[in-house]
Image (cartoon, rainbow, N blue to C red; front, side, top):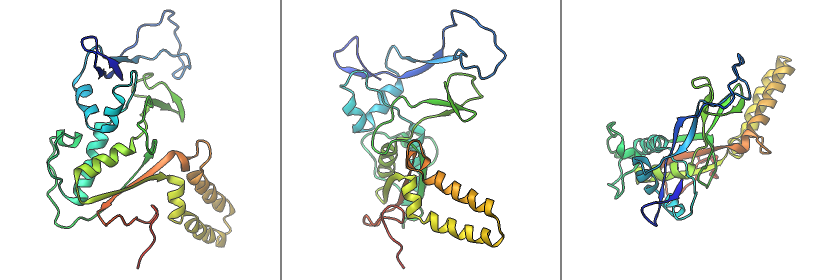
Length: 261
């Protein structure tokens, strides 16, 4: 979070850290494990001073730097996802020349793959998150398919947050000069372009020969769930991004390109 500094007129980033939550004023004993009124065990608190992550991570992208002058701006940065993506790009395209500013991948102690004489391979990244903006305040918990506080019942709640696809694209391109990034595009559009309906119909025809009408319905329902673009449909929420060897901007299938023979 961007906050004015008490010792300087220049704004500075402050890390939101996990701290123990204060005890509730009224203590209620309940045996229900998923009580809606359950008091979270932890909470997010604003660090009182700069921390190493708040000093380093926001300097890695001009997108973050542009928000610093705006008070109370919030950005979410996942250095681990940047590092994994940079490693994918390095393995596909080979090494990159030294950069002026350190990237999350460069802070890792793991050995880097050798430079490749010929770029090869590809990576397909699927997850949910905005296509162009920086995620803000998306940390959440999920339990029994329902949203809950991420700070309730530690160890029993799945922790989730949106993916910053633009940050992943930057990490890939900075890691290797011999890769291209395509997308992200919405899952529904990508699956339609990849021919999901034609494939599903082939499966349904095989089921029809067996007289399996219930099987046909399950396949059709599954396809609609994957490509649904309205409301909170998976086809709209989930995005897909590709990292491929540099090929002059020629788009892969599913990202606007066609099949060539």
